[in-house]
Structures are given as structure tokens and as C-alpha cells.
Length: 390
Image (cartoon, rainbow, N blue to C red; front, side):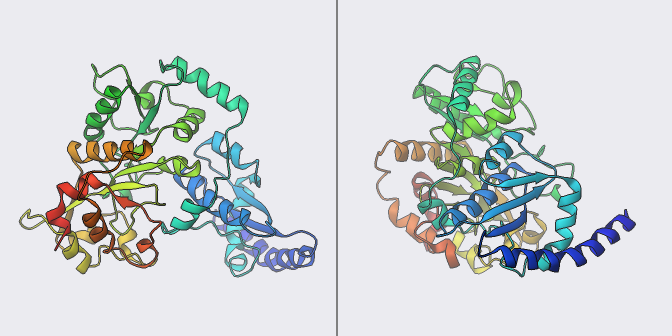
């Protein structure tokens, strides 16, 4: 393995300047960009590629982009991206380009797909790149019927990351992003009472839904899950009731509104002006007392700088400040769901929330202060106004 790495670095050292020279010569005829697809997790495969694609398509002369990748989280999504890019799936080419990356990253030929969670303008104002084709629509409708969903009925997707998600990795053992699916069930029941379906999503889950739920609450993650329907359901739902986990990014791709529960780190308000979210609460580890969001901001928790350590998920960063997160309860998640239901049906939000929402939004810095950034759930704002207002 050490010898293979040495050989790849040696080849890359030779190839990098030669490849850049060739691309420079070709530039007047065809503009080419090279990069590595972030394909191992569905969230990165969706949103990183989408942001790059929207920016590329907005250019007067969009370049031909060639991506390499190896492990792929969702083959259906990869196939969709192949309609827009040249994608070469090869371990050798991926490892070779990773060795060439330091040189390419400093050139104009590098396809940069990094995102920093502050791409609110791209999500709000640039059109989606991918679209479902007719055959995919037919297949999706067929599978909806197999799941017991009536033709033409609306559905929402709901999901939260739990301990089964990457829990086998030591670095993920203590994370601030996990939550309990139980706190989403009241919202699912409410959707069912409105005549819609609530579809529990996920590929790695801690436990199935409890028995005896309304027949309109479907445990897709346990009973029906497939690569194709992961994409179809998230692309066609009324909205996605999720958390800071990757699957919601598929809805962002297709312009579907996202209602994000348990949003952490607090510096990240969710992408785009159609997003509503509820952050986790904070309390002192030492005495269990609740912490106002303004006090947490003074400790740096809302620091949105790209180098901020608050982008990390592990709780050790908060231990040092005597802070711990408290998961949104069922009432908060239900309120978020109702707020998004109001939004997609053009129903005015509860009165009195706007001032509190604005006060919370002012805690954000840099590009997260954009008017295109996600907005606090109105019902959450009203319920927790004492933690938001000075």
C-alpha cells in the first residue's frame, strides 16, 4: 500500500503539469474542468454536486466537467448526474486525481465542489439542474401504489439521523446531530389527520416505527427502501421534515421545501429562503439550566466563519464551554411541521412571531445573515421567545 501511494504520487507529479498544459491549449476550443465527486454519502452527492452544477450552468460558457469517483451512496442519483457530467467510476483514477489535486486546486481547471452551508443565494435563486423523466415518473407512481399510497395524494417525508448513522465510527460516537424518530411521530399523525401520508425515510436506522400507527404513516425505511425511491420520494414530496442529515439535500436539489428539526451547529440556519427550521436548545452541563441563544452567541456558537470549529459535530467542543444540546421535543417538531404546512398552502403564520424570528436571525454572522437564509419556525419562536429575546 505504501509503495502504491508512492507510485501514484510520483505519477501525479509528472501528469499534473502536463495535464494543465494540455487543458490550457484546448481552452479556446473547449473549456474543461476536472474534479472528484463527493459520492460516498448521499447528502454530499446531492448538494455539493447541485451547488457546483447551478453555478456552472449560470456561466456564459459552461465548461465540460469530468468527475471521478469510487464508492457511491446512491446509484440512481449518480445516473442522474451522468446526464450532466462525464463521470468516471474508478478507484485508480480517483486515487490518482486525489494525488494530483493539490496542483489542480490552484488552477482554473479544478472543479471545486466544496460547500460551506452558506450557499443561500444559489438555492434560492438558481434553478434545479436535475429533473425526473417520464419513465421515472411512471416507476415512482407504480411503487407509490405498492406502498399503499392513493393516486394524487400528498405526502411528506420525515427523517432524523440517529445512533445507527455512522455509529460504528469512533469519531462519530459522540455527535450533536442525532435525534429520536419518536419525536417526529406526533407530526406524522397530524399529517395523516390532514389526509396526507407521512413517509419515514432512512437507510441506516436504529429501530422500526412502533406498531399500531395510522395506515397513512409508512415505515418506508424498514419495509420498502430502495435507491430509486429515496430520490423519487424526496423529489416529489410536499416537503421534507428532516434534520441536519444528508437525505434532506435531495429535496434541496429538486427545489422541494425543507423543514429542518434539531438544526445544529447553530451557525447553520439551513439553505434558502423556503427553509424553516428549529434549532436544538442549549443548557449548562454543570447545573442543567437553560441557556439563552444570545448568551451562546457570545460564546462563539453562532460563529459562521468557514474556519469555525463550531461546524464540527462532536460534543467535546461544547464540553469545554459547559454547554450541551437538548433535542427538540414532539411539540417543537409538530409546530415546525404545521408551520411548513402553512407555508406550502400560503396560509399566514401565527401572529407575533416575526419580531422574534428577526431577533434570532440577527445572531447569525457573515453570509448566514442573508435574507435568503432559512428562517426560524414561527411556532418555535413563540414557544421559546424567552430564550431568544433579550
